[in-house]
Amino acid sequence: AAAAAAAAASPSAPSNTGNMHNAGTSGTIGGSNVMSHDRVKPRLLAPSDPFLIHVGVSTADGTSIKASRQDKYKQVEEFLRLVDVAVSDATTGQHLRVPTEDAPLRLVDLGCGNAYLTFGAFALLNQNRGVPLEVVGVDVKRQARERNTRVADKLGWEEDCVFVEGTIAGATLQFPTMRPWEHARPEAPAEGAGAAVDGGAGE
Image (cartoon, rainbow, N blue to C red; front, side, top):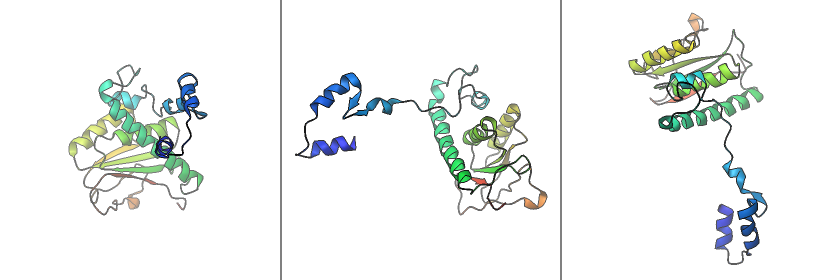
């Protein structure tokens, strides 16, 4: 689109009506396939994923995404694409150690709310990719902790997905495999939402 705008603004831009005519029949403009812009991105989580069903994003039978939850589904998918690339790049660059069952990756969601993104990350990395992973969601609201804990129980993820009530600066992170002396408080300059993965190559 930027190239087309630049060509239209240039008084010396040659006419390309032949290619424009061909676009209506062959789907090309100047030799590039415009149909590539209409390709549907592959889904990272299918509507049948148990997580999406349990939180009400998918229909009860898992055949489709509810019309009223399309925006939430898109938000989860876009977040997971970022997580997927970040973890892949960090692993390839040896910035993340190779996780094991005894020493899994640890992900913290600060200000997790209803934990759609938290559960989504666990579903993608652990359930779909087989990456040993533990997550802790932190939120100041008791209702969020109670709701998310119930969802984790229903999904059978209660041992790996833990939710705590508290502020970002004051919450104590207690991962399932942490030894007592490893418990720590998250360091954050101010209240706000965020996520982090603990899995340094030096560990």
